[in-house]
Length: 154
Image 1 (cartoon, rainbow, N blue to C red):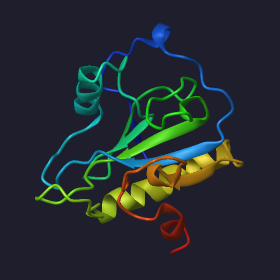
Image 2: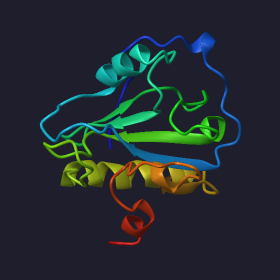
Image 3: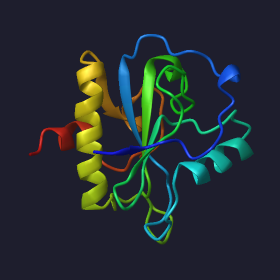
Image 4: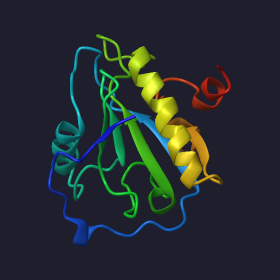
């Protein structure tokens, strides 16, 4: 698997450092399946929301291409209360044409996610992999599928 470099300049001096990685959080961009966005687009959206920069560590495009976001050594901005101990992966997609939650990820995205998670688990074997929705006090469908159950399928 090839991981593409982050396509934007990040304000690394303004970002907090990661503590010990305890979680790997899977997210969706909550965009329609026709939206062909990547890390640069998400960076723009996050800065518009007053984030320092993209909040995720990785973005998986509809094609299955994996792009870096924040460096792993820096805390993310993707799960309130867990950013300093969770890596964030964002799958592009997750809503249908009416804006409703939908598991509409491509086979290429899911293959890339499985490969990326395997690679990250070699570096962070103790990390718990789960969806954003599985964290306490999160009232979202994100990433629009049960990550734990999906991980159990071949």
